[in-house]
Image (tube, rainbow, N blue to C red; front, side):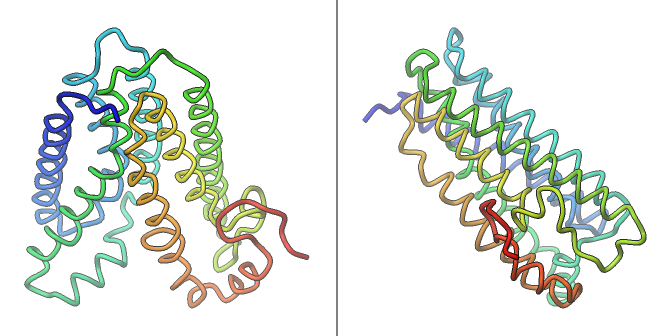
Length: 263
């Protein structure tokens, strides 16, 4: 097993940067009375981790670190700007609003640990391929890197096109209360989450090519978050109450991985 000599330094430095960013963001959320600001920062935080690793720990002559930085930055900025645009002026997300109501005067400290620091720790683990795929010198760019880039591209297209199609659908007042079941949304109920899934498995393959196969918990954790915890499962736990037609959509459309819709 090949470990970089400065693996501990790499991990601890990135953890410190993430927690510092999350702490500052928490302070801003108290001033704004809006914990939703953590959502558009989530993808941008990965770009910050990528550049921290690249600036301080990546071999200067290796091409793979630059590849990882570019892919992570493109994904992070695209998703971060989209979430910022989508949430602009919409007020605090219902999830955080419900937490605020539940915890009352204690929400300020509860949000620090259960919203900001928790997401910071999750970000640190999920970003292991981004961190250690750069730290390891590895070998030259090879077939596994190309496979990872291909999977990343599939994911980026699914996520970007899915977000565009949903935003366009919601912008039409005639679609209020309706369910989007065309385009990519005809073949999977969550093309954006499936896209995220592919992006992070693609980055993992690139890290494997560098020798960091032991970062496997990172894409596994992201897959769990997307499919079972904060992604598809959380959304579908409430959406049928708000949109009755979604039950029929569930019955005929694959849940996560794209497939042929049922008649």
